[in-house]
Length: 178
Image 1 (cartoon, rainbow, N blue to C red):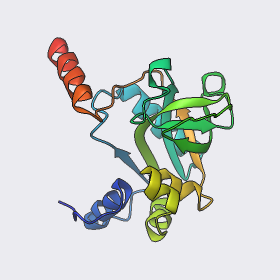
Image 2 (cartoon, rainbow, N blue to C red):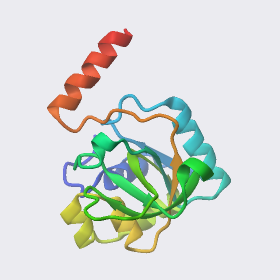
Image 3 (cartoon, one colour):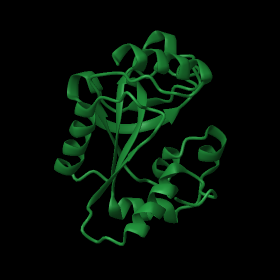
């Protein structure tokens, strides 16, 4: 168990890492419980990409469906390149609300991160930023402190569990599969 007093999931991951007392780990994956149907192949692809490209931090994103553009529970990531064409890019911005955003490379962010251990150490040493607190997006702490976040294109779009309605949808899907 970890402390209840962490500012973010990443801070919690760091505490768990420290408890392991291991020095032979290069990368740590933070797979969040609110993405229970994330495709295992996307996780493997993210891991492979991060290691091959020596990523500080990397995450997944998929195509943003029209129905999710206004949904505040769906975090959007804006990348510097077209993910569907290049399969990976650098994150420029994360947001919940697109507002009048005119940029073309907007995707549905998927709640998984892979951190180089040194980047995780750096991240947890930084203070929360005002935008991180206001928007409840911990990845803004990294971006606003000049840490690079690579974004890898996911082939599938998992259903996140952010509301009771999401839970019921996931429950139905999981019951159907079993």
